[in-house]
Image 1 (cartoon, rainbow, N blue to C red):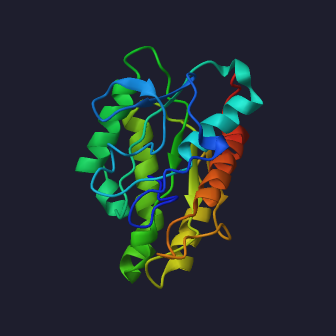
Image 2 (spheres, rainbow, N blue to C red; image 1 turned 60 degrees about the vertical axis):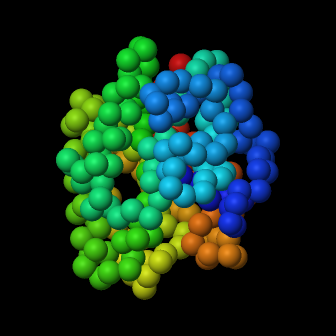
Length: 225
């Protein structure tokens, strides 16, 4: 989710048309201020790794392309790569940071319209983690909705395209099997992964995923008018 498109050792700085900046798409910086969104969307959030193109801007541009009257879209990047679902449990540093950033996004009259969630490769390494993934992910969704006082918050999650370990099918089955209201899953299986690591999506695949996330959001979100 943090975006590794175009990254080998360094980011290649190629930005597809679908991920271009525009004044109507903003991002919340690490310092909790708003600025015009630009790639890499997570540069100051997932700051210990090299970030490139991710699905966030392609998602926002896809929504605006379908409904130019939406006005401002605020993106609140929170992803940190190479983390397990257990590191996002209620009370953890990552959970609290996500909550802090979400609450900051509301201060200027904004409204949280959805959570986009793409995570899980680390949970394919250990059999027990893979088997517990569904329970942990479901608890995370329930907890974050409760703490944001938004019990029906639309959540669009991604079923993995790749894995770091042998338990990919177990984690994918968990992701595809989450049965909560206003939670939908888009399947990244078959999207192209980079040859240098065989885990992260290519730039073009990130763009495709962003559009798929927009499709998923529109399936479950209340009217945007």
